[in-house]
Amino acid sequence: MATVGGVEVPTEHLIGGERVGSSGTFAVHSPIDGSHLADVARGGAAEVDAAMAAARDAFGAWAGLGAEGRGEILDRLAESILERVDDIAVVETHDNGSLIVGNRRNVIPRGAKNVSFFSEWARSRLQHPPIEGRSTIDRVRYEPAGVAALIVPWNAPFMLGTWKVGPALAAGNTVVLKPPEWAPLTLSLLGDLAVDAGVPPGVLNIVHGIGEEAGAALVQHPDVARISFTGSTETGAWIGSVAGRNIVPTSMELGGKSPFVVFADADLEAAARTVSRQFVNAGQVCLAGTRVLVDETVADRFLDLVRAETARLPIGDPRDEATRIGPLITPEHFARVAGFVDRALAAGAEPLMGGEPHPFGDLYYRPTILGNVRQDDEIVQKEVFGPVLTFQTFSTEDEAVALGNGTDYGLAAMVYTKDEAKALRMAEALVAGTVWVNCFFVRELASPFGGARKSGIGREGGTWSFEFYCDVKNVSIRRGSFEGGTP
Ligand code: NAD
Image 1 (spheres, protein in one colour):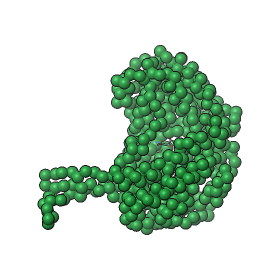
Image 2: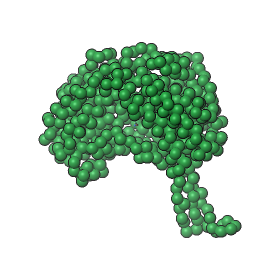
Image 3: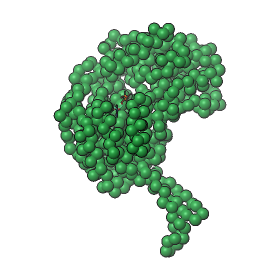
């Protein structure tokens, strides 16, 4: 166990309902001040094997409980998350440097919702109407697939972990979850909450470890029935190649470089406020609109508004309720972000705002906007995953579309305009899993979520989650073939 922000957190794996250690550990440090938080069990192939065996053994009984029986247990898990929101929020903030204010108010309560929403959906919404053929009636069944391997990144582990655990368990699968090594602690805590809520041993297993060790062993395991991965496009490509060889369905939520398009007729104040929000959590948000595209006739005014809105966002310790921009996660990631900016500046980009570290602490970086960039520049093409935006102008709608679609990614796109027809044309023309019009970051759990192009494969949310986590079976019954009448 470790004590983090006054909260006891387990540091061992959870396998078959028991806490189990490994011969090695890895150290976890807080991005807030570099302090040592915990030494966490460093699992590998042996721990993955044990967890997979426990998950396989638990599968039949868990699937057999039915959506109703599972739902009662999962509702208790959601309740216990809600009872511990403050504790989980504190641990998440220490672990990955995300804002305490957001964790308490939105992110961790959303974790509870991820569990209760999908358990309710499995109970009441997961039905397909019979398909009436001429000679047959087809009945569609959503059946649990087996053991789901779930892998999430460090920027929002509790929220992203429960977004997978919730529907995977509600569908009747059992799970082996690998938390991110840079921020593993809240998902470790989730294991205790699951045990307390009565989730049977082996239904939710947690194997801690390094991506290339525990993560790689997990996705290569021959008994895995589903792989749901959120993380970088590079890791996703490798996992996809493994899954391809083993014919395992995957859901991939990957990187982004989303355009934020602002037309001259937009509510510029609202748009500027939302652009400044791309810096929250130091920009370590996959969905962030990191490429600001502005109508050239309002560009100067809009930049002034963004500068003013950003100046209102306090930078500092994320444990402080007032803070809006905290640290980057690790020294390696800080060097990566700073390297992107330094190379862009050396190549001729203009620092319209920031462009250097912030003096508050070792891992803090100033909110940065870079102008004078070309579409094929590294800073426009590559995901930085930090508080760094590029700023480009356009003169026509077609040009905005060309710039917006001009990367390999397609996670999200934001469009600000008061013209409905224009908004709908843009929404159609932009390549993205989600287009937000005059808003940002609103995500209904019933709506499809995922990325186009190199931002991902597949969609989760609502029924889409169950189409992924279930084997969809068609039962085709010949009409009139039963004694006693037509089915
Ligand atoms: P990452 O790909 O390095 O790691 C993600 C997870 O994969 C971690 O748990 C890691 O341990 C594991 N992993 C690493 N190598 C592995 C391997 N060979 N086999 C199996 N697992 C392995 O990504 P990251 O740096 O932790 O996260 C940042 C990335 O995640 C960004 O690209 C961001 O855009 C993306 N992201 C996407 C979404 C989305 O919904 N699309 C959400 C959040 C983050």
